[in-house]
Image (cartoon, rainbow, N blue to C red; front, side):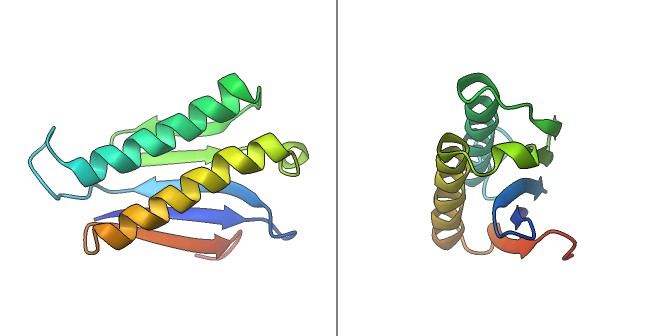
Length: 111
């Protein structure tokens, strides 16, 4: 199962995304659930860095993604739109692929 956690800071602003695992909904290269999650998170990363011009910290590896953006960028409308759209899309995918994709909202420091 792939688990995607959207974290909020102490001011309830989206601050980071952590994704771990593989959906295992199909064979490697044919897993539509995993591909959808990956594509959305990659698009959010590119949107933040290349479109919004925000420095994204983290890493992108197979089955393991962490992206975090600076506190000073969290109130920006463009940053919020990019990340909130990814969050809503992941939430919908998790509903469609229950048992394969898990969507979690949490506050920073919460594990």
